[in-house]
Length: 380
Picture 1 (cartoon, helix red, strand yellow):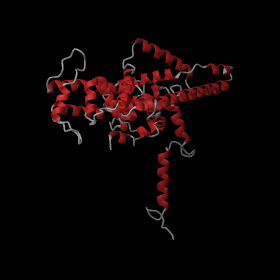
Picture 2: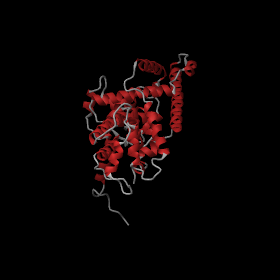
Picture 3: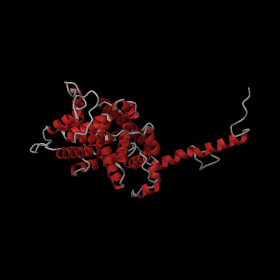
Picture 4: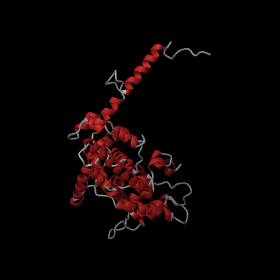
């Protein structure tokens, strides 16, 4: 099976792969639905207070889809910064950002503020990516945040993720391609079956490649090739750690398409040479495939900055002030909502017991009442 065939069996492909049109339509639907719910919630509050402000509810200026995306993008950057501060590995950081982006496909910042969801997404990613950190130590790194603030939104988050926590990242594919190119540069590469090229001829072809930038000399030795490959690898790796996370690339492209596009963006000639080694026919790399990569490169080039400038900060401040007036008042206190849901799940005569404890008690009683630990005798 190829890497893409394996990827098509994953939940990421089945549940989280979209076309641009579908993705846009989904966000518009989420935004309009949230706006209706905000107005309904405000109407209920105003009618219960009987203060004569019901008529003004319809005039509430809600966030647009574009404003929501800017706000979510900003908190994705904050999640990345906090992950770097905690010295979490790249996969934890990347997974947390994808959790946030997936959550806000079916939820709006007008319902759940990204500031509340961001710590929960990052803490969840440390668990799903097997990078253990205790809740106590995690909370200690966050100012003005309690353990309940982190845990309370977790069920909402997992529910929106459809309880699918696996995120396939492109970094592993990039490392594999990097090692292959290094092997070609030293003539130690073993071409795949069916290829007429030898390791030596591939090395000579690589030496004939045009420089990655104008004015730079052409590579003359294996050491020159190694330096070029390392520079391209570093640039592609940085693209995958930033632009790939802050755009919709994960929703629109497969991991292999992502890393190859990042490499194409870093060194076009080297990337095309690498692709050519995978196609043995006279036709070369299919134009449709190159078109896909170039579309991904264009998307990666449109990525928001990981360090917002003064103009961007001013715009984000405006959006946050606007959000203050159009948030759903019934969904603000996530800790309180979480506690209320737990109370509703407890029997009135035994307050304070969780659902898991009650189930365990029932099981113990059932075993005690039976003839033996395996249950009563089966009668014919």
